[in-house]
Image (tube, rainbow, N blue to C red; front, side, top):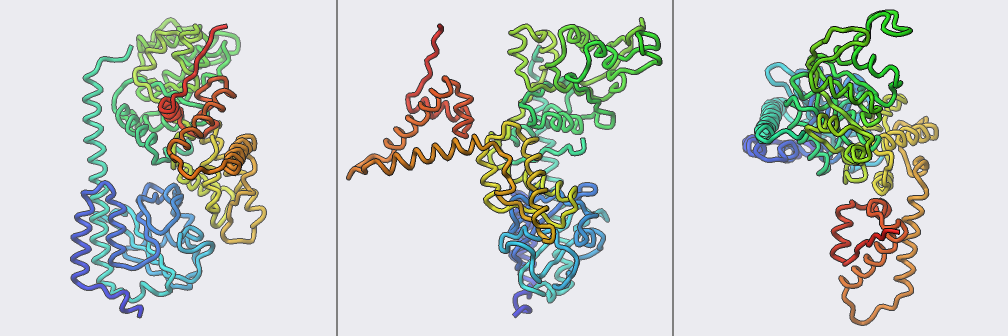
Length: 532
C-alpha cells in the first residue's frame, strides 16, 4: 500500500517540472510551488521556508495553521530544522524520531502533540548556498520511506531552481515597481531594535510596505504619523535598511525624554566647559549620524525654542556645538515620528509650520491595528514564537477561539498592547501546563482585555436578540429594508451616545471610519453640529 502511494512515474516527474515552470509566472508562485509538489508527494502538510540569517521564514504553507506564516524559526533552537539545513540532501526522519517537531500542535489535521508520523525535509541549495528548505509531514508513518532516492534528488534539484527563480523574480518585480514609483515621485515638486520586521498581509500593510520601498532609496525627509504602539519605529528602521545609507547608522533620539536645557547639547554636541557639568567634549546626534539617518521619535514633543534650532540645522546641513564657534557640515537624512497630528499642532501654534514642512517631505501614515483586517493571526504567531523562546517552552499555540476573540477587540494600545497581552497569556498558560509538551493559550488566559468593550458588544447583541424575539415576522417582508432600518437605528443610537463623533462610533461598532461614513450616507444618516 505504501509502495503504491509513493511510486512516482517519469511522466509525473515531467509534469512536475512543467507545472513548477508555469507556477513561476503567478503572483502566488510560492503557494503554487507547494501545490505542485503536493501532487507528486502525498502529505498532510508542506511548507517552504527561506533562510534569513539565523532564521527560517515561512514563504508559503499548506496544512498548517495560518499563524505559522507569522513565525520566525530560530534554526539553532529546532533540531530537525538544524539537521535539514546542515544536510547536503533530503532528510527522512524515522517515524519514532525523538527530536521535537517544530510543527507540534500546528497541523490543521491534528490537534496537540503530533503522534508517530512521517516527516521529511529537503534543503534547497543554489550555487552551493542554502536558500531555503521544504518540509513535508504526513500522519501516515513511514509514508516517505519508499520514495526512491533518485526521484527525491530530481525533485530537490527542480524545487531548488524553482525557489531561486521565484525569489529572484520577486526581487526583480519589487525593483521594477520601486524604480517606476521613484521616477514618478521625483517628477513631482517637493512638498514644502531587536526586531525590525513589519508583520502583516492586510491591504493597509501592503500599501504601507509599498510606500516604504518607494521612499527608501530617495534622500527625502520622512514624517511618520500614527497612534502609540502602532509600529512607527519599525517603519523608520525599515526605511533606513532599504536605503543607500544602510551601511551607516540610524541614530535614535527620543525627543519626549530630552530635558529642555540639554536638547541642544544632545542634538548638536558641546565642548568642554560650555556649561556646568560639561567636563569633556561630546559629539551630538547629528555628528554621530553623519552619512546615515537621524530618527527623531516623538518630534511633536519638542519645545518651540528647540524647534527653531532643529530647523536651522535641517535647512543648512550645518550644526554648531554648544560653546563652539565653528560650523560643522553634516549629511543626515531625517526621519521623524509622532503620535500627534502635526498639522493640527501647527494650527494651534504648538509646532512651527516651517519645520513641519521640512519634515513632511514624504508623509507616511501607520495604520492602527484595528484597521489591519486579518493581521491578528500573523502577529499572534510572531509574538508567541518570540515568547516561547523567552519562556523556554517547547511549543506554544493558541486555541482557535483566541484569534477570533483577539480579532474582535479594538486595540487602543495597538501592536504593543497585543504583544504584552500575549506575553501575559503565555505565562499564565505555561504556569497551568508546565508538564505538557504543547502549551495552549485559551480564552481564560486572555483576561486582561478591556471588559467594557466586550460587555458593550454583548449588550448590543442582547438588544438585537430581544428585538428579534419580540418582533412578529410578517407573512411578507423586504429583508434588505429591514436590515437597513436596523442598521440605521443602531448607528444613530451610537452616534447620539458619542455626541456625533464618527471616530468613537466607528470604534464602538468595530468598523473602519470611512466604511461607517459610506454606510451612513447610504442610509441617510447625518450629524448636525450646532454652535452654542
